[in-house]
Image (cartoon, rainbow, N blue to C red; front, side, top):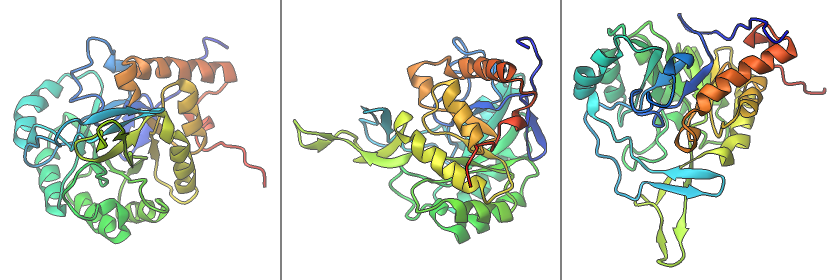
Length: 309
């Protein structure tokens, strides 16, 4: 039984991924920074840091603070911008050993549409993750992700631009993400990813100042895992498109919990900073777990949480 072959591939839209273990946007750079310590060919996909139309310097420092069982970040979507991404990064993805998913962010619907339109034709990109939640960016007013109508309209417009998988990254900073998840599904999204970071802050009692330059930031890491599991379980009850789960996953046991509540794939985020090989270890651990349980396919786990009536 130990050598039994297991099928861990997943389908999102019209693309097949050989593994459900991915690395989250903003935690793996542009996909090259970790290559000396991580065998990226074993991962299902690398999600790039957010790309915006213009380059962004990001928020004022300090931008990262450790907290109990987690991390606060207020990076502010710092990135090289669309033009440099096309000129410098896309050629390097020609022979990249796994699938590349580009994360796109913006302050206006037009910005999302402009960036997607520019990147959609490139065959190096397997799929797009649209960052509708902006917990650590000051400008932009209302985040699209908290309004079902805005989310529907933007997703529908994006859908008209590309046939590649569209993954909508939902914000957890609302009463229930179900309404927005249903809206983007109806508008043509191929999957949702959740949860993004929760709004949080930290205070220095010696100086009486916030510990982040931006005052508040996005809380990630093990502290948010129970919230992530609950929100994914809620959304799984209502939507038919795949859910990519994230939020404090740092071991294979964590990942399996996410599959059981309904995630079809998972993204490893904060753990990449703590222990870069985490995603590879989870990949190996998942295969072992499935072999020991006699499970042939990932479908035998997804959403199989046993809930008594």
